Length: 222
Image 1 (cartoon, rainbow, N blue to C red):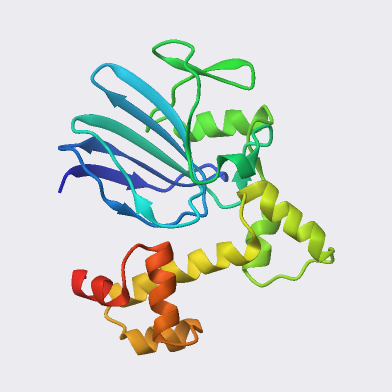
Image 2 (tube, one colour):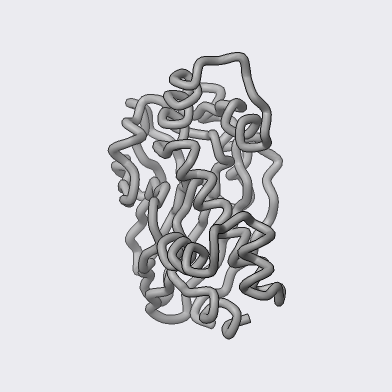
């Protein structure tokens, strides 16, 4: 394994998970499509970067260098940075400007880099200053709740918070569910039936697009 890492849940209502660790060697693993935003802090050979990542609308290759210390903050779906143009940040990594070796600029203020120990407090401070926001409608709609709002309003709030349409979020989440079922030993045909794919070619197309592997490749890798 070229990455050694730990993960924990977060006490912050804006964060889904916090992961930190280091790389033992260079790597270019396949990464899946992603609906959530991430903040990633990378320290490597004296250099430091704080990167706003994703969402990714398709699978692709990730890259990292050996001997890097990395902190990943996976924001909860529906959490976003209102003053940044969400749609223009899709499928890219955006470096936040540095204010020195220990801080960065965001919305006109210098902020100290978070650590694995204080990142919950850091995120909550961003929210208190209205730099970070959360739209609960995203979670509610994806769980089947039908709000008394126009379809256009719902569509606009999805695009504002995630940069993605409601349908694309659903497709990505379903593909991840399918990959997990296959890793657990569910057959390809049962996965098709359970998750409502039209047929095996439909499943294969969606997994290649969003996960980067075919059903057979996922089954063999478990």
